[in-house]
Length: 385
Ligand SMILES: NC(=O)C1=CN([C@@H]2O[C@H](COP(=O)(O)OP(=O)(O)OC[C@H]3O[C@@H](n4cnc5c(N)ncnc54)[C@H](O)[C@@H]3O)[C@@H](O)[C@H]2O)C=CC1
Ligand SMILES: O=C(O)C(=O)Cc1ccc(O)cc1
Image (tube, rainbow, N blue to C red; front, side, top):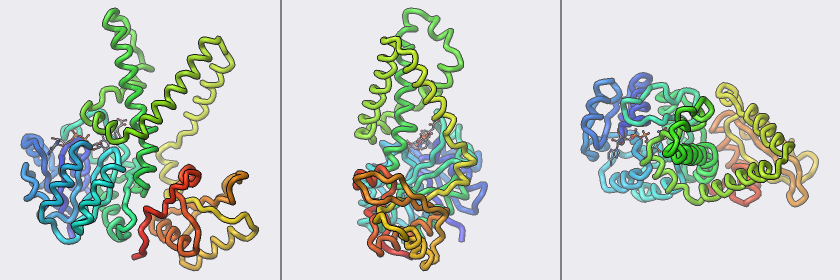
């Protein structure tokens, strides 16, 4: 059965998903945007079948609603959807770069019996608008979904399949708090640093234009994202404030470390800082490798006794759950043993979390959450489908 998909905000991201849906699925795609001109262009390039500047008519018959608006407009769109009649069984998702605040706000939809699954495609561009849209913008990138504990697995699967076809991205599941912490470090902080550096050099250039004239490859490479959309980044920073304040403090410490090494003429320290960075940079996974590696991981505390790994493997084996790897984490004095379990398929991961919880184990999303006692199971569906 073809899906009817409503895209709210047919810009760079909404337009790219719409193009992918039209190219690789038999969905009907209806666009909503504040700009009638952009809707007209989106129809012209075949991204949408129809477009309207009136929300109610666009969402009325939709099976899936994708909110691809600026982060600062997503909560408002959720409020509007709460007031409108939607189709029974409709799934609402978004593409916002931050997740915790949006997911929390979207609980309003649940109160009205509407399923919301937060989303974030982890690719994009410093460009914006439907004119920059491409159907393969997200190919091989990760696409994070942040379902709440009570979302049914079948809804997560239905949305994952559609988005995978539309984007050719790898769908992964993550806790929204965990998502914001990671994306804060690898995307939001770099955008702040790029903008700060461009502004700093811009100040010098005001009195001497050679600063810009001599700006070569390194400066351009590092500051490409300093040309990103100001409103979009304003909204992103304001919706990930606590995480970013901590990250900026850490960044200031990094700068202080370089500053002391330089001011003290500490050659070996300077060399070490660059050696470490060179090594770590070379260890970044390339896209292909990332896709072949296990995608779903969790951690459990176990008593440090012989036979415990076999016991876990048997427990999961009895439930026909395919485990791709069990790793033993380095033991610390203050903790019991910690096992890292990896799964290739979301269903296996989810069923394993449920099965382990039933058996009395405490499951964590990552080792840091484990140390902070941020239990993953509080956000995992409590029922199998
Ligand atoms: N740009 C990027 O690289 C990425 C962006 N995102 C997220 O995707 C979302 C959209 O970003 P982009 O597509 O880059 O922005 P964009 O500016 O290209 O597209 C936004 C669209 O929403 C429309 N719009 C704005 N306010 C509206 C309103 N009140 N009512 C109706 N339509 C309205 C605009 O006319 C535009 O067509 C943001 O939440 C952003 O955080 C996620 C991943 C990557
Ligand atoms: O242009 C780039 O390299 C980006 O970083 C694009 C981007 C921007 C925002 C996101 O939430 C995800 C990706």
